[in-house]
Image (cartoon, rainbow, N blue to C red; front, side, top):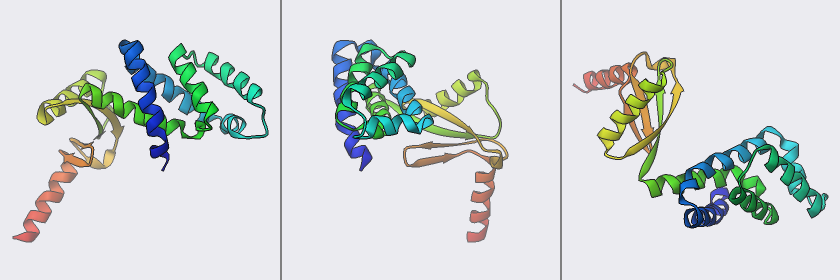
Length: 181
């Protein structure tokens, strides 16, 4: 339900930023995520911004202070004030997620969660993302997580598909194949 409420806000922001300053479309993702993180990190902030017990003027002043401290640009500031005025601040994480999805779709990019056995440096991460991009024929934005249970290799989830190149996955496939013979 929250994504349903987030979609019109994310679409409106994307349309405005894309029309006014297309080069800022990606940067706004970070601004939305910073606001969502601030609300998650300080639950009292969300309570103050959503309670009817606090005046609109006080909420606006508090929001302005938060936006100043987070160094928000003007398009994000205006948008966050609209979100506040429409009592949707509790949906900020979903708005940020949906906005990112809209940007990814417009850029022809797909998100992937890649599990790896050990830490990869930036170059290794780039290489893994490049291999996935080549295999799938689309740009991949990869998020890497650590999973020592894989033993070796990696496992990537792209949308609803799982690509398992881990040693654990290979052993599992081998054992299933052996059992069916």
